[in-house]
Image: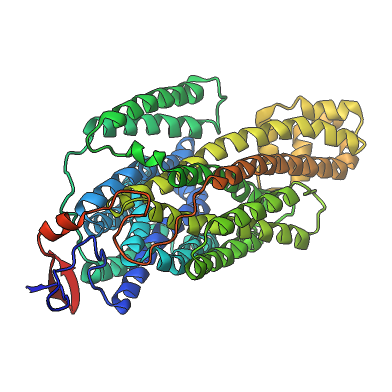
Length: 577
């Protein structure tokens, strides 16, 4: 064993001085690559599975459990996020990230071996248990390796990973399903994850805080798990039930009630899962609120745009993924550029506000969408919105990590991930409701405007919600589906009107989609207002010291008294004992 290198006559550097523990720039970049691979695994899974799921359900049966393949993954991955962040602050990033990646790979392998929907749902839950570590700890590792001023150059790449996975996922899912079978959408994770694990095991230091307390808040953890489970299941059930039903409103109410109890427990806990004191920090609190609101608006846009391209523009499922490339291109470019600008200038508030303004403008432009809008115009609007979303993915992480003491970096980063995921879940439930309601309202209006006689309009208005949901389901010949809703005795009268009916339904669908963008405008404006409260704290140029407005992570006397950090050499790279 050899001591951490230090200048002669100087004390051994402590964790407070250098969380990266003397790693070379090359080692840091190799770790960065491994961490990005881990992050890519989680981001890719969110897009690759959806493409293959219809084939999976066909082979395994159990169509009534279709939504649970997504719900269980969302549930376990969201609930575990704060726990991974908290535990990584105590026991170090390396063991928690490696445990998370390993669990994710085990869940992937088991999912590929599934013989029925019950097995698939169980194994997807295991996958989610591991996935909860990928986003928060990956981002926290960057906080360990690079100073706040340096992080922008690298955090911007993480926004690019999200965009890239959205492009690759649908194609990879379709290709693997059609060529070697749906099992491989899960098996493909294994070689990527093994490479990531190998590099992390070889290079990433195991950093433990000498001052960390191990008194975990088990009571709070229990209430948090049950509260978030009830909330997320209730929001997911909104796809098939009304707000007033027990399985939606009842579960959401239980979740909110238990959430209030959780906050009471956390306020008295010695070592809370989510330290409520962090929210007294204006910059931290406004970042969390703004991230929640941005995710609300962003997920609404990203979900309904592909549906518009498929149903109205006539794109295939694969081509609809290509159609959203302008949005993803804006997101990727702006995420990288914003990170670089933050590193070079040290300023982040103007960049965030500019991004939120761009997102608002982009969403406002997309509310002008019509069934006959030229696609190049739609692509331009999408690029503007994407350019606004990008900075929120990269810069808020830098802001939060710079605003909190280093000893709370993991839990702060995980909270940001948690609020982003919860914002998306709430946004999808609410925008989905608005879309469905507006669609049913607009169909008779647009059919009347298309020149259909009242009796024909009444025929469609009285078809019922389920019939209309089937009608606007992507795929199939819309004209034939329309005739299928009409009694045989009237088909000869309706058939000449089919083109006008198709046009009216397309316009009604488009108006319903634009209604979701209107909600996004409201939430993005509110996110802009929340971001105005950000206090622009100068980015630190050294590692480990606390932000100027908070207590230091470790005092000089504590640091001097702490046991010296020792390093062993494995494969030429330092690992801390």
